[in-house]
Image (cartoon, rainbow, N blue to C red):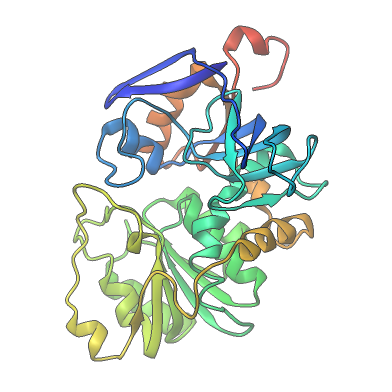
Length: 340
């Protein structure tokens, strides 16, 4: 089968690899659409991801929607023809992907959700299951999202769908505009305003917030003070969570004075009130199917496997020009006559 393989840090090739054979408690999906994780896929390619994706060689990508084509002898949960979406540790930029029936979890894709939208909905794993859902965000609460990349935008839209009023900060205006389009009430440009200026505007517009979500992998602010704003914006006994609590990079650049957490008695952890569940993951997909979360608005580009080097660079170095890139597991010549 065709796959995009990172042979070693910095070396990405499109080549034929052996098609997976599912074990007794595995099943196989044919990839319908996948999508680039703007941060992690680039970190893997660069060789700076510290954790479960630091092995080489590996098939790149982990956001995927596919149709079940083969099931192991002990699998009863799914059947051939079912359409599922999930996070995969086995690589998404390939024609076929094996799935562990007892693994990290997957969602059944509602019939009215297109394949490419289902693939980017994998972000519900971190941006809903591990942030908004586990914080048990309720109607009327005030939420601050730090970072309006794809994950931050997904978290913002999920919080809005739960009835919260949402404010977002980011360095890029295109992403702040998208946050407002996704339902956020307030957006502040960190490249034009200092933390203090944003804090003043936030207190004027919204007041102290109930929960702050750190949806960044690296702090790109000039002052390197991305943690300062959410801690100051939180109310007493507020909650703080986010992707930075879990994503592991070899050169993390976050810093924070813990005094600011303790003086407000802020709860700061990855899973807040409870761990996120597979049911939360499915709930996110169902909300998309019900029209409550407009994930389709995040897609800005579509490519085939030959376009990966260009698209990875676009996501990493030109965030002002893109948000989410969908990947189809074909070569350019195979897609002649098809829209990209």
